[in-house]
Amino acid sequence: MNDYQKLDAWIDAHFDEEVRFLQELVRVPTDTPPGNNAPHAERTAELLNAFGFEAEKHRVPEADVRAAGLQSITNLIVRRKYGPGRTVALNAHGDVVPPGEGWTHDPYGGEIVDGKIYGRATAVSKGDFASFTFAVRALESLQAKLNGSVELHFTYDEEWGGELGPGWLLKKGLTKPDLMIAAGFSYEVVTAHNGCLQMEVTVHGKMAHAAIPDTGVDALQGAVQILNALYAQNTLYQQVSSQVTGIKHPYLNVGLIEGGTNTNVVPGKVVFKLDRRMIPEENPQQVEANIRQVIADAAARCPGITVDIRRMLLANALKPLPGNKPLVEAIQKHGKDVFGQDIPAMGTPLYTDVRLYGEAGVPGVIYGSGPRTVLESHAKRADERLDLEDLRRATKVVARTLRDLLA
Image 1 (cartoon, rainbow, N blue to C red):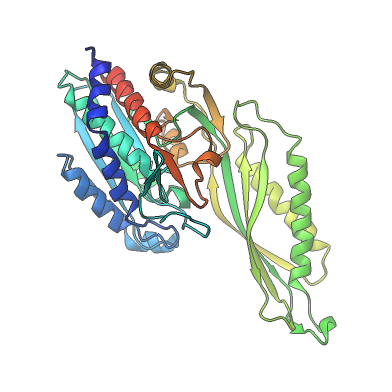
Image 2 (image 1 turned 90 degrees about the vertical axis):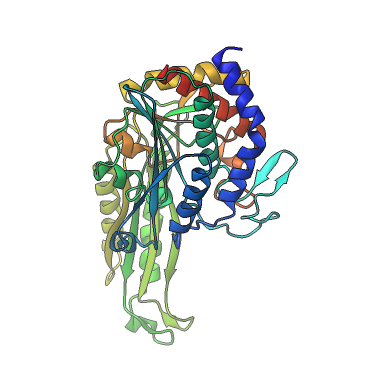
């Protein structure tokens, strides 16, 4: 057998173990919010230690975590050094959105039904804790001479922007890889993604008794005026097209609204949070300035209304760096061999913490164990699931890719 066949055979022989590893990871909740994720890192480190992988535990200071609105974060780095040469990082995040309603399977059960494993984070992205770990184990089973190193980066605030995950590790100088692969889906290799601007908008009016509404200023009516202006912008965004395959146009979503005190009270304050996705061609500073101007103009048409705007997140788009070519070519080559179909290089409308590696000058791509689309995975919805054959095959693709990069 050649090395690729040996890698495949090792993964097949240890696949039941890989699935059990993933089940153990799914069974430790990492809902974010509230973001008490250090216990999952401890459990992951314990499981990795059983494979002979020592995980460095990098605890983010409590004050920084609390300031971000979370409870605990411990990021993990596993360093596997084989010889002089480049370092390839494999990053996956353990934090997830809360399960929500509508599940027909235990969101933390790791149940297997009809060849799929169900549970929150099976697809995004504890599945790639498993694929990346077992790809490295398979690589080492070859006992071949390798040039360079592999690092596993398991981090815990991607849902919150990544600044206390990869961003924190990079800023602290705890890692500086030459190339990186981040958790993704199996049928495409992603080289670009959208940026994201999230803002909290507080609309102030004046509370009053509902029997004498003229003595107050209705903050909700002011918010409606502002929201209508923002949604009008959303329609205009559809006329702007990205040149990146897989990405269409900018868009805006208002995902949370709260305000008022009681049914018989004119609301004095309304708060809403918006999410503005930016295509790679857009300038984030210009996008933010435009949003602020649209809100200010709409508020000015409502006498007595004032507005406070707080930026929650500004995540830049991921743009391809020239050095990512070896990653793309290796994944496409082995993806076609293992999956029996072409693996296109393209963009995605998601935003991820991979951008932080790009901003640090580290060429990277997004690839891992997952279905063809976000919709198919049920990510961020009830009954998130991962096809076990996608997990098996993606593990093989990553192992083969590492073999090429470090040979």
